[in-house]
Image (cartoon, rainbow, N blue to C red):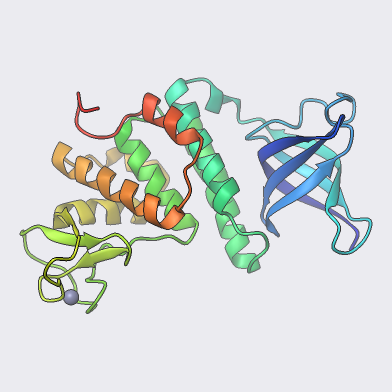
Length: 261
Ligand SMILES: [Zn+2]
């Protein structure tokens, strides 16, 4: 199938040679893919206003030979998602999600998984277009994005024995194992992140609710701070790369208690 038409979200562009661009797209059929946009740097006629970050497109791709990179032949703008750029905090959070998708979304993969991730991307950007994000929403959206990428922390059961968690005493969260460790399974001297059951329940609710319902979730300041720390450490370990957009996001939506550096 040398020529195909599909939807895509523009994740990234890299200049190539004197006049071309390589575009990274997230698609519902093939996950993340890269394609060569010939003449995209020179000719505005060819891709008039279509090749910009966040753009939701319908594209036509052509592959000259198996194994070769596809050429982007045409791109039609379905939505520019312009509202994402209207507020600095919203833009910073959208950039973070976009970069995370660009770095972590698989190339290819099971069609159902590709579709699910694509639907998440469209849904989260549509949600952010109408949202005034704060640090709380940043943590919520980050954990939702990791979940969509298959990096879901365990929040209800001990990661070692599978026992449902209970009680009010602080628990330990094992960042590498991706979940809490109950008092029976904890080993002396191991490094666990202290966390309360209420914090894990709040994060669990973040993953279960519709995006539009997240606004209603208002954990207390301590739980929020714990959740932010947990999500950040989870990301450091499991994402394993530093995202360029994170510094901008830290400036716009700093985590941690007010006044903390
Ligand atoms: Zn256990």
